[in-house]
Image 1: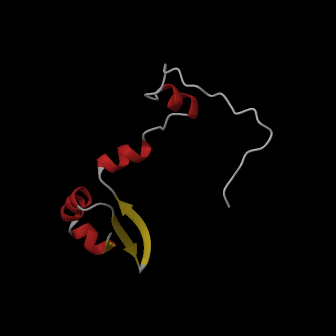
Image 2 (image 1 turned 90 degrees about the vertical axis):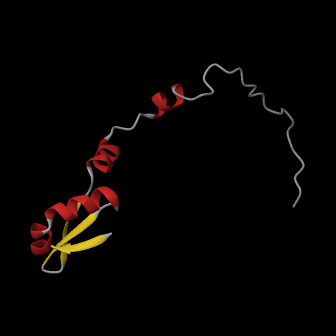
Length: 82
């Protein structure tokens, strides 16, 4: 992430925006302290897009409708290799 001082970012806003689109987030500092990050619209949309809840996620699974066998072995113990 490229870091810009606020005064420099103001003077080169076009370049800062172009770099945000091509290279990713651009950090802006004020008196040496990070105060803002400029990101592209595409990145903003990706981050702000609501994610589905668990039920919606499961319903969208490509496995929906498949007949899966979930039977458990009924033995009391099982052998394992240590």
